[in-house]
Amino acid sequence: MKIMIVYSSKTGNTQMIAQAIHQEIPGAELFSVEDAPSPEGFDLLVFGFWVDKGTADDAARDYLQGVGTTPTALFATLGAYPDSDHARESMERATALLSGAPLAGSFICQGAVDVGLQEWMKSLPPGHPHGPTEERLRRWRDASTHPDERDCEAARVWARGLIREERS
Image 1: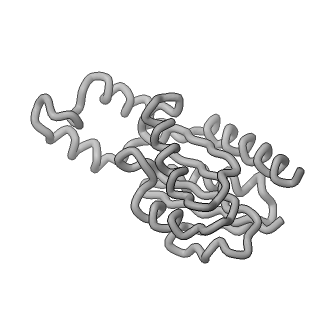
Image 2: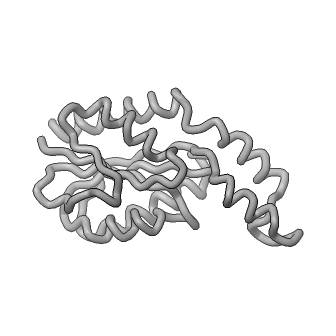
């Protein structure tokens, strides 16, 4: 089975998860989205992105729209909690970019929020919908230690199950 893992990463969070997944898929080719070839000719694409504005980041979106019919498994990192509505809706929006490609599975985990984005949000006027609320500041603190080894292990477990399912 010919497998390619591609990831888009801004702060290193998604790259870390991609590398954990790569440990579980011997022989898979690993690329950053900037260097990735077309998935044509691969049996499975395992694609990772960071969530930006409730969907895949721009580079990921551009790549996913050209996947064609290659079966694709998606993984993502985001600053929100992975069991939140925002996480679920973000993965749904990213999945919708796969026009014609069957979804083989999905995985999402929390990742630290870019410091520059935090600073920008802190500069917003009081009451702005993206301003720093107590809940948002708490979530940023929680996210600051992610992905951690538990997240990486969860990604490896997901990858093992994904490959087992694809090979059966």
